[in-house]
Image (tube, rainbow, N blue to C red; front, side, top):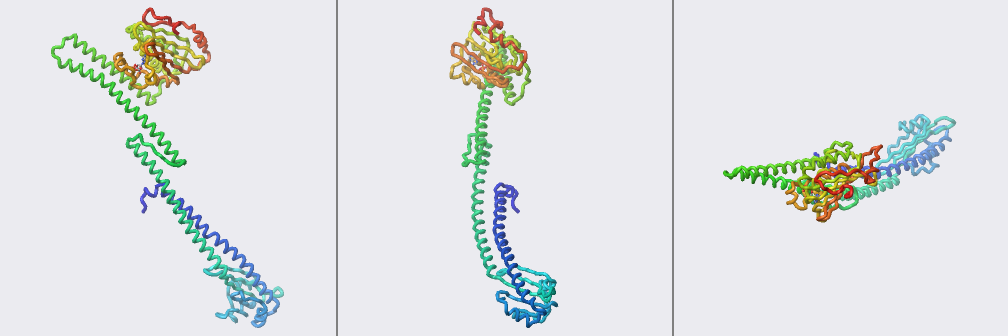
Length: 502
Ligand code: ADP
């Protein structure tokens, strides 16, 4: 019994189908031509032998009565050498003539079915092919004045045509063996080629499965298997990129979590090991532990937020009024701006709405304005503006600061997770390196784009473009474009004119 694996394999099925098809073709090729030529010979024999019997019958029909003598005399006048045997009976079925030298039946009643039917008035023909010869028989009544006076039975054996057909058959058999052998060779090569490439693919899948994401297939040809190989390579490339990102993320995340944990550990060890620590120092240490724990909490919250977004959790989308949302967020940042002596100015077009999650809008504005405050020196201004674009189907949020700026080499990387231009400064100001990555995610979720312009020592401008929520009676956009919307100042007194800066 064949093992189940082999029977269900592609190569086995392919081989079986191919073999069955070739076998059917060869069988048809072997049988059809010989059958057709035999049929042609039978038809030809039927007309020839029936004619011969008719000639004999009509010659005898001149006689009133069939007797051995008059029958022999009539038949002697005819050329019947090519016939194997001739039997003539009278109307009773008694053989009056038999050309056979052996087993001669003259004088006996003949009960050959052909003769019986001929005596019944029918013309009969029968032929069959045996190895080496066509044996044909024909029988015909002998009529005289409308009466059956006897019957003629003629028999012929043709070995010449049979030899010709036998010859064709042998040639066909030789050709069949040749074609069969060629088909087997073709089958063997096709299976080898097919399985070699399938095995290559399967090996590739196994290699990637074992963790080698750098593996790429090199498949020859231009067929479906090559296409599959190409798709496999694309998939592996994506896997490799994702895996590299994952590793970097895990290592960065653990590094981020390790630093505050190490500080907490150090501070708590210092407290527990020094017996004579004064209460002021102890309070300072405990406060430090508290701020490190707070940093840990902030980082883990942002990590969780990012991982939720990576999982594709869809936020609740509503129509968000940007004026309200930005005002609310800036209000939360006011204490930070006050502490850093930074002025926030705000210029907003009324009634600009977007279809987005309120959380996303909060994250976008909060992260950008918080960064602008944190990376700006004292007594500078951070300007926030919300306006409709020239194309009224989209709007812009712009956050401009006069801070330290970002080096041009780092501009492309600031949206990467855990990327910081100056890690020490970022940590010192409570940064996690995740703010802009989350902001970019939020912007993309809202269907918008984010870009940054910056020059070191001059400041940075973050620009976000979002599609406006469709509102039929919205005519506030015109006001925004006119630049006549009222400016608002939040933060330290003495800030610059929001309108002029805008
Ligand atoms: P962080 O929490 O460190 O601020 P972000 O993802 O928010 O992380 O920002 C990434 C880095 O981009 C920051 O570490 C900082 O170097 C730089 N950056 C972001 N915003 C500003 C800005 N307004 N001015 C100067 N540098 C900035």
